[in-house]
Length: 161
Image 1 (cartoon, rainbow, N blue to C red):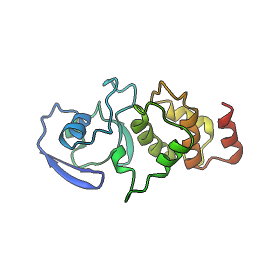
Image 2 (image 1 turned 90 degrees about the vertical axis):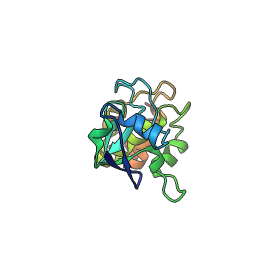
Image 3 (image 1 turned 135 degrees about the horizontal axis):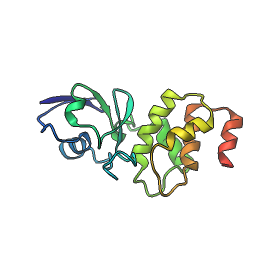
């Protein structure tokens, strides 16, 4: 038996010790926004927040998260209002096919928390930890920079590369 606090709700689940957190979130809790891509921890599509820090749920055993506070992409919006990063991703065209978007958003939450006011190159480097094959990262970086509060000059620099 494990206890998880997921997106503000308490869950007590019986899981096999070998079950991955990603599978438990998707199959037991119906939170299919957490995507599985490479299942090797490389792509980042499965990124969630565990106790406020970005983590690859395809590499985390569910039993390792026992007692943890887990946030998935479904937990970002509050009372029908999109999270500022969700709004910024849409406004800055930071999504295309959408497969990487949940993991990118969850990583972005961690980046905004850790790198608030950071330089664009630092944000770009941090967001490069997740893979996207469609957007070229420019819209994603602009969205994160906007929410992270980078300076006007730095924000202008994201539009040209």
